[in-house]
Image (cartoon, rainbow, N blue to C red; front, side):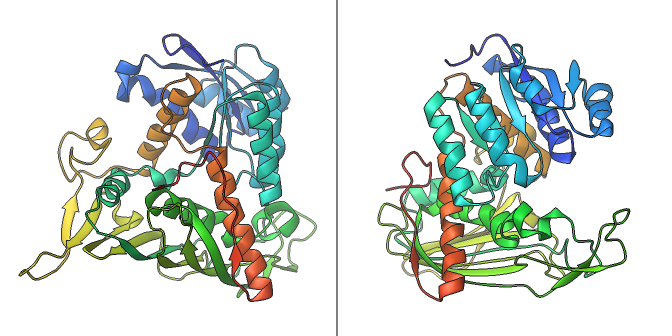
Amino acid sequence: MPLSPTRSIGVGLISAGWMGRLHSRAYRMIPLVYPELGLRPRLVHAADAAEAGRVAASDVLGYERVSSDYRAVLADPEVDVVSICAPNFLHAEMGVAAARAGKPFWIEKPVGRSAADTAAVRDAAIATGVATSIGFNYRHPPAIARARQLIADGALGSITNIRGRIFGGFHADPQTPRAWRFVRDQAGSGVLGDLMGHLVDLVHFLTGPIGSVTATTGTFITERPGLPGTPDEGRLLPVENDDYANMLIRFDDSAVAAGALGTLDASWIAVGPKAEYAIEVFGTRGSLRWDFERMGELRLAIRRPGEGVGYTRLVADDAFPEYARFQPGSGTPMGYDDLKVIEAKKFLLAATGAAAENSNVHDALASAQVLAAAEESAASGRWVDTPAVPGHTGHAR
């Protein structure tokens, strides 16, 4: 049953690490940024296996009570909604448990280490009817919302092709210890499942579902040192998953970009880029470009008869959805944290039965199935179709 939007909403948190703290801050900002909604999140119960996490949840974030076991959060009758911010390999177990407990949940991606894991969470959510929201934060920059509007309005004409890349250098140093992200039975695939999952969802959001893929993956840093303070310290251990991935894509017939083609690249060992998460959409009348490193800008080119064509730099202003909620004048930058406030708002609206604007577990499965097809293609060298996912919020015709 949807929660009442006019009463306080009890929040539960699973894992009080960096992302859990970010979720908590986002909840606290809701009454300030969206006062007219009447949403009043109350930080009720946080769980963290580490004592330092529990202390932070209580003393810094202000949760009323803390536990070491996430099941205590799900069993708490004062918890209305739950944020799941634990390491990736725990997401599927916790998502299924939250659904079975009847708690609407906001879960970070990837929802599972595989499409099968993600489907299990989807099925549990369907069975109990709980609202779900996924941490696909790159959907939420106002420039991306404006880009989606332009595509929907036909400003670019018929979409012909897209290019996307998600490059970061945070694992470029070979001396970065081999944490769980580099171990297949804990992380699943590497950059393919982690960063590429964001990019696939962004493509779905802007231009619609991907219908088939052919892919390659590679591991270029093949060994990393064991974690300090563990028995493996001082040893070189094998990296078990990919650190670069590339896909060629064809769009599904239901997509706004039906018939179009595209290329997607992901790397977390790129030397130079910091957060170069970028997408370019080309059409018969024009094109647009966006890069997270310049989150508040959109570059737009429109072909007009008798005129030269070049890119116009659009700087965020109140014509960009949500922007005026955060800044009073055009051009003032927003930040990553602001995107999570938008995401929290969309989750709470869905949980209270309002019109759903959020990404959901069906979107998580749609992305996961593209990544599974990419892994299969990388092994076989063939094009692989991706099955349709009912209930997704990709940009359909």
